[in-house]
Image (tube, rainbow, N blue to C red):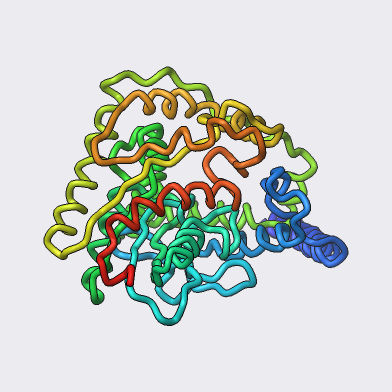
Length: 365
């Protein structure tokens, strides 16, 4: 028995020395070469933009999420040169100190501004256009990674409990609702199985599962494992092809979306603010693509039938922006869903006329 334990001890000691050496090697590597940035930096929209690499490093650093009741999550506070997230978890939008009206905007990461600096998000460009039209507007960006329309309406309800209501509410979304349906979770948040697993792990009789998860996490964090993964790395697989969705498959997506929009408008009618809604474009809606855009479309090809089938539906009270880049041959997208500043400015320009028509008269003085 002593021999067995001696062998176990020697093995553990050897593994510990290997792990320490691997950690030191990784530390030296990181000191010599900067950490890699997101592969979306290769998008043509960043050609000649010296700030882009720093932006994507900040984006990665800003992705710490905190639990929030009802909506699930929000980003933790973060301050950088290109991204600022306030104590409330919302990305900040530059605006004048003296404002006449308040606009709340809701959506997922496309509205939040993934791929765009603080000055290039849709809320920022919309504030600029309104200012040029003589309207001093404070725009609050409620966008967040992965939010579906149900989370957005819940975020609206929670924000109304905090204080004064807005003069106008805008929704810019659609893709995340489709992705949730693609995952087989119509009407639920994306990746909802993660929340189910986390809740189940907290139950008293699941201690074995908790121990297994801790072991998996420790193994995943090991320098030995990280090095071996790099040595055996393969290109990331594309999303699997899925059958073309039937009418019955997609109809519940739009039923949920329109019911959420109806709820928001009923709240607005009671509180005295109008609601605008816009269905967002994707790279699949752009016929002429750059090499990077084509590569991103190929990477996400599995959901393409769902996006294209969704364009055959007509929803009352929703402005479909899927064709806004149809005649654009230049670079717009950084991945299948997110655009750079050139795309966001066009979306904001399309919105500004609708916004001016609905703002109260005091805003235009």
